[in-house]
Length: 116
Length: 112
Image (cartoon, rainbow over all chains, first blue to last red; front, side, top):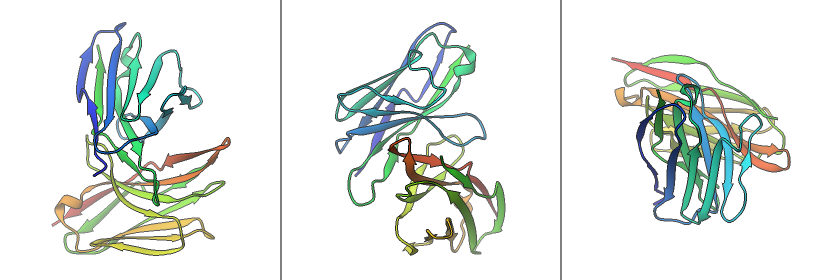
């Protein structure tokens, strides 16, 4: 159980275009999902907390107009990188929290974004 | 805020035991996680500690001391496939809501 999928796994786009990344909880309902970004040889940095049916909570320094998050259902959250630039190239990882005793997060496989 | 420290790199021999330490400072502590991350992949959950003591799960064990702000991950009978980064993550209070903060990770290299 507790499987999280992410799509696409890899995307290459031109500078100025927008890219949408989907995160799905396959076998459970996730009221809360998280979006992380990881640059090479660095740890995961939380970008935002996505709550089903409400606005996402963004971390300091993350532009909410650039990184649009939608959590329309209990099994799907999307991250749209708008007007992507080369510096947005990174590994984007979502996670979903399984409510219960451990309150554990399970991660999707990640999306590697390359902006040319 | 939250501050997490763990060694950057460690090397250990196949079949041996290795202990990866993590110290943290946080407000409103609500749990500590260990994740394993292979290069180019997303993290996978290893363990969760919220109370003091040792949690054992197969070859992996995790220890927590809340009073000392200290945890360690113990890997026994090391295998080559255990070469990976090990992330310590702490859940604590941040501006009124619970947030998980990750350490920078310890890159473990297992050698024959």
